Length: 230
Image (cartoon, rainbow, N blue to C red; front, side, top):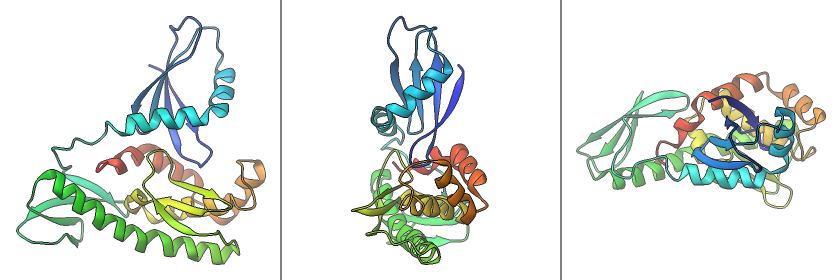
């Protein structure tokens, strides 16, 4: 099945799996948190499809959210997760707290559901330490000041910028390498003067980070894996 890359307004890369057997209307189906399957009529050109995708982002996000709900199994814990861009083993042990070691996270030997709950809480705390100071540092360097800075539990975006509510970063970016976290921070900050994805917006992003394409490629390759805990 052909796959078409598409970038949402917040810079999140998703994949669109195409099938051409629909008679009249486009039919959407969620695959996972970053993939949508679309069945479209043969007469719809790829250019027209791109226009439709740009004009129906709300529907795309709703469909992605449905796919995200099916990702993690509640009765199992993954063998490893990404942490700061490093594959990090998850090891059950006889202890009462979650403990971070080089390339390993120790978790109390409990049910998988309880382990996920405790690990998510631990990673949210680490995300606040990893992402928010980084965002504040970039904001000071760019002399751009969002109304607020916080984390989000979003299923369909890595960051969001609103003039009234400020910038929120997806806590799951605690798993991404530093250059990816930096890119998302700068991407959202550049939306303060440019609330769009115009050439001026991308010019500003690229002026402040040399890692735009590398970061987008990493998220495209590994972004789904950051949702291993739901």
